Image (cartoon, rainbow, N blue to C red):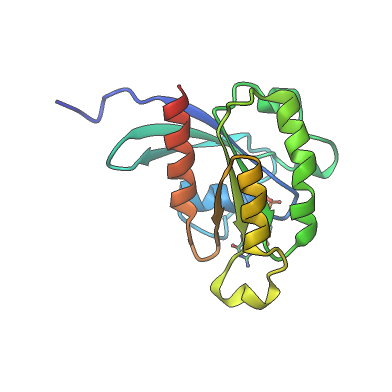
Length: 177
Ligand code: GDP
């Protein structure tokens, strides 16, 4: 018999990417179900907890936001330590944020085991934003394949594919442990 008291595994999940791509918004959307947080979610918040209950499995995600570190210095070793999964975010309307993924990858390679699951996410793929899209889906897909990543285009604003991203990273983290 299963009960609500059944212990569940906890995974440390990092969200990384340039400032402004929507990392805090992504975390807030998933954890609190809202788009505009009632506070500045980036400042002073280390992580938030969310439960993933896919029906098939249940686990707890400790979701870390970079707390704005990327604005003034590179992300540190301690942030990456013990990561069970990494969500790498760019903005589909800002090709610079896609170009910078290469630097993020070098950082990840430096600080994380190579088998830590990683997911590539193109955010702001809003239905009404298609004319502003500057990163082609095919280019991003190619990058994801080259680096062996799952790939999602999402809209935190419209909730498109947000739950899918966290379900996928939870599934990969569970599989690895
Ligand atoms: P961070 O610096 O990566 O944490 O980015 P934020 O979460 O602070 O978001 C930066 C800006 O992008 C904010 O104005 C958000 O409202 C906006 N934003 C986040 N997600 C979306 C989205 O899916 N669509 C649109 N149009 N804007 C978004």
